[in-house]
Amino acid sequence: MAFDEKKYAQTPIIDYVKEATAQYSTTDGKNIIIKLGWEYVSPDEANKLRNSTSNIIFRDVFIEQLKKLNPLLIDDHQDVNELIKAIENVPANINGNQQAWEYLKGLRTVFVQNEKRFRNVKLIDEITLDNNKYQITDEFTYENGKNKIRADLVFLINGIPILLIETKAPIKQNAMNEALEQINRYHTECPKLMSVLQLYALTNYSQYYYSAT
Image 1 (cartoon, one colour):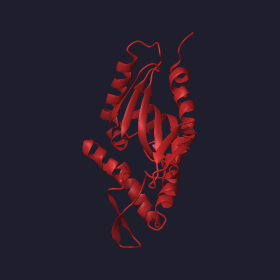
Image 2 (cartoon, rainbow, N blue to C red):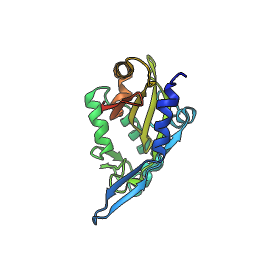
Image 3 (cartoon, one colour):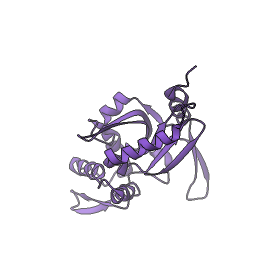
Image 4 (cartoon, rainbow, N blue to C red):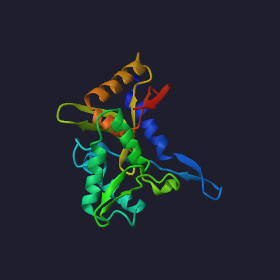
């Protein structure tokens, strides 16, 4: 029987993270365990949430979570669109990768129209983890007008892609080398996407390697 990549490497990861939990400590020293419950999003739905395969962010999810985490700050539609544009268009290199990280950490500012000044915004709640929305999708297609790639698995927090995983069949020879070659090709052909992503991983079910983008 053939060891199908999707059945034996991809689907088990999706099934596992649907039940994933996380433990964190509150400011008063209590240890809290929550179920993150990564929500599976089909490739077709993922394309709809991005409006186009040339976009990176799940736009409606991003807007909903942005307003949830910044209820007194973000109220202008133009502000939100400018922020999405800024994240999706960070420089397609290691400097852009750091800028994306700074956005995720709330270290970069955006111009708030109703206040006429620049303010920091929170994109991920690092304290109360269940305030975030966790999603996973497969066969994530991205194209930039010149090249087109299709990543096996992409993890998103609050609509922003964070982690990409390339999966290979367990019995495929040189599987991990092939997966790494694909990751290198993604960096070369679609660097803008890889600049927003913060991590990538390779697995053939029995082996698992990961690194920063």
